Length: 193
Image 1 (spheres, rainbow, N blue to C red):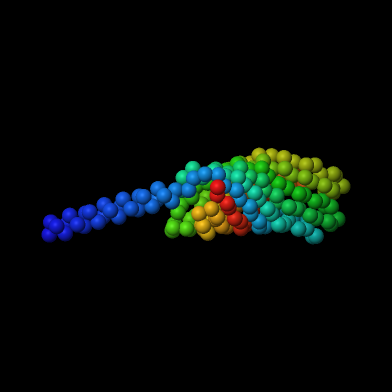
Image 2: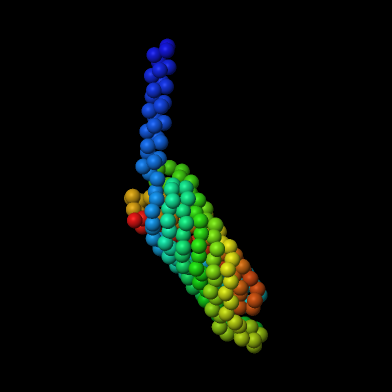
């Protein structure tokens, strides 16, 4: 009985040691580049406007640093495309928007190659407006606001990763001065150096 307990204890210690070694070896740290494409939409921009579109193709690029399996940071640029394009009796205006971003990412590895992550950051919006609202020319508007994200990642190889993510950019100014959140859905790839 004592021999079995000693063998079981030794086996458990060996498994714990092996698991710790695998986690240490799997620790991903270093610089990476990412490129993503998807769709961005501002839902409230087109309220009460007959001929209006408030969604467009969006692209993002980022450079990041992964500190360990659970923590990373990114600097990025997002082009939302044309978030507002309307033409009716009161509104004849268009808005193109983009953002420079800085964010922290927290990752939770779920399986050997699969994980989920969350993002918290700041976005510096650059909004380019043209046209008129009720005959009044619209002006450009820039601001800095928080943004959030959540997604999943899958490691294809040691250097390549796929990510799918939902992002919420808060309080981007519309052509008439009202503010709306912009939602973005993205699919992209990451290359780790």
